[in-house]
Length: 309
Image 1 (spheres, rainbow, N blue to C red):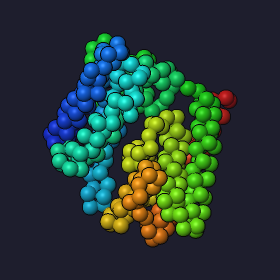
Image 2: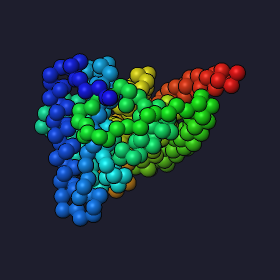
Image 3: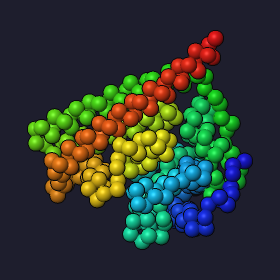
Image 4: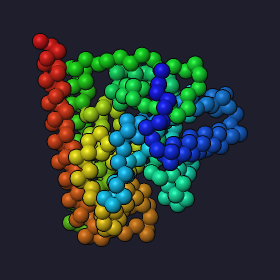
């Protein structure tokens, strides 16, 4: 049975989470309205689970330093297709963002991921540590009856090591290539291409970190979401992004927007000073992710060697 108590949270945060659940159900219902396919007509949210720092009780609220822990939510639905974010969950994401940034009804950013019960159970059987931790430590904000999780299986240390090494080789190398491209475009006075390349380098560094640490990374281009997930897993990564000044906050916002706006918007502008700062910060993030991976992979090699002996 999953935990259900929110007694460790102040009343204001419990109200926040009740509002989150309300919005998720309302917007999912709107997304399904008028759909005729059987799996859409019978579409259902089976579980809404709080995980991460607010579930564990170690969240951070430091508005002076610019760091506030996000609410991390897993939504479980009853059909694989209903987990598609673009088709069913974009308006929920937009509305939750507005609740935080415009209406101020929710006190911290809300990040949610969506998986079908079938897919999630498959990940549990395949020993994905990320989901095993959620099932063990998460708190059910809503749970329909008679939809249990499968018992999680444990991978051998050698299996974990092989996967983690493969992920690091692929994603870290890809990030390094995009960072080199950003430097090239900066020199060539192609600021939009430089900003987009920096976004891609950052995204890939975060995916590299999460995949090495947990064998899972959400399929997302949203840097704010990815940054939050990684910094909660390793607070040392916070050093890559100072956020106490308006300049620092503006630069990260420009980087966050670059995935779309640097390619398509004629109004997207980034200065040489901002690009130089971003190149420096992504370089620092690259070093921090490498150091974290070295520690993790070293520990996995030791565990695999011990398991063999």
